[in-house]
Length: 265
Image (cartoon, rainbow, N blue to C red; front, side):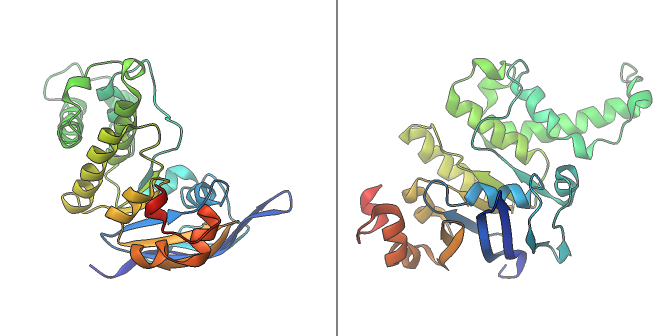
């Protein structure tokens, strides 16, 4: 359980001469919830973009289960077992919840165009595969309590529910490592509390390791096993939540004065 199976080593990336991420290193143990915190513009999402293949780092390494995945294309990253959500919802609004979740199964689909054309025939390979994928998606719908939204167009759903659909689509990839980029943004307090339970269920029931970016410090401190604080693209401290939230440089980065982050949230 304590074996580090994902690590970032001396990661650097710059844009137009501005160093957005400056020699960031950390490792994540299997089954843990590891959070990255920092003020707006600290470089958190840029780190996620490097991990998921949207950006190519200037230098440094990203190691997943002993394999260097630095600079791989996003679809290659996904096939390795890494999925992510985004700050801004990236769903197909004119498709139903079920259809959006089924899209997350694409890397597991074996049926090609020609064999898929036989779907109408009962018992065909394509039909059997479709049933298997729908059964898996139904498990996600049950896990995230999305039954009432199953056949609704995503664009008509409340914002908080749409965030859950995006989380569900990421889970549909059957990730070993799940990157959550501000999953509670725009949610009310009740939705955030429910999200905490779902994240813990994903960790405990599905055995998924989670890398989290989140501005709600109460959530971070409640569910994280380890926390990395960064500012201006540089690491401040990594450790257990209680230690990180009391570090003077973390307090200064967030508040400009020394009081616990929890008191300001």
